[in-house]
Length: 372
Ligand SMILES: Cc1cc2nc3c(=O)[nH]c(=O)nc-3n(C[C@H](O)[C@H](O)[C@H](O)COP(=O)(O)O)c2cc1C
Image (cartoon, rainbow, N blue to C red; front, side, top):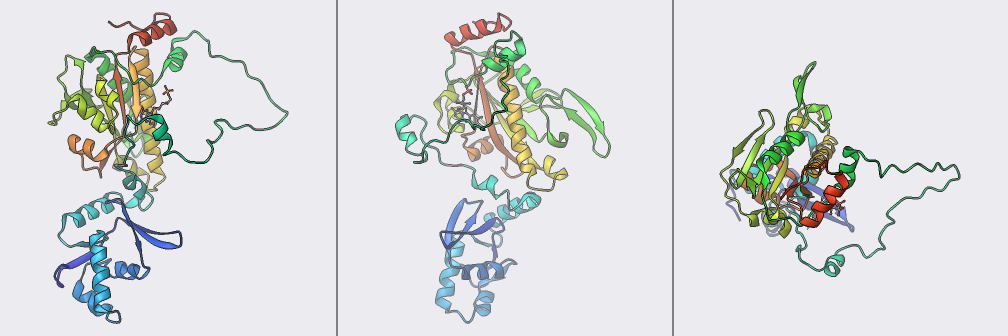
């Protein structure tokens, strides 16, 4: 127990809810939840401004000192009550200040970070045991009705754009060679680069990119993990969209760092390059003060990834995307605090294995460049 004169404060980053008839309190920064007696809420309320244990003993003098001390200790252990001057209180204050307009809804963002993942090499039968025991839901919805219009099928149209769409697949096997810096530059510029600017009254100069962005706020940033890129040293780089420049970051990376980033998915370490997508939430939050805008940030990351996969396919490369990520590990290597800017999604490319190359050539009518 800290000394009676130490000031404590309730964590701001917590939510309370009822589950199975009992109260639960979750600290969404530690991602721990606790069952609690509703009386704990009175204590949390008392400590919503910093107070000492002495003050609590006086305020709750009708309770036994022993039971009060026990409850306080439990709340301190659970990091629901934080000590003034502690690193935990500082972190709690930073998150609650930076995310204020989008809280408490965006507790979701923090509570779903660093999720535990089933080991990638588990057999399917074992992974299936983690799925719901209920029958698999139908894949398609059927609306009954007599007024039906059968549509012409356009799948086989010979057009490079539509062929690229149909050719895109997630790849998890790659040939051993390197991708060229030219292709990496093209992927970065096409997906995350600035295509031009326009003026918007009240907002000044805003960028155009190939993907749409709510209010043209473009919260996305991208970091390149170069593993096998011809003419570029292996390492982590920040891509500056404004001037189409890569800046090397100090972190030392190896192919196994790539699979570690992707929660143990070994194929990521055999890719030639990873494109780590983050968001600077304040860009969107500055204009859109409601938590729904968090959805916008996620939707936009999906747009970027699809653009990336299509561009990579068109270049004859083998793309993939993954949301199974070790957030804190990645953010530490990128030098991010995970508060103002946080990782959301990772895409990657390698060279296609031989049998895929044949498919690319066949489906592109030879329009897509061949690689050795
Ligand atoms: C948001 C998102 C997350 C994904 N995460 C993973 C992942 O963690 N690991 C993986 O192997 N594939 C992942 N995928 C790829 C899907 O498994 C893949 O898209 C799906 O199997 C369909 O295959 P296709 O992309 O070739 O059409 C992800 C796809 C999306 C859209």
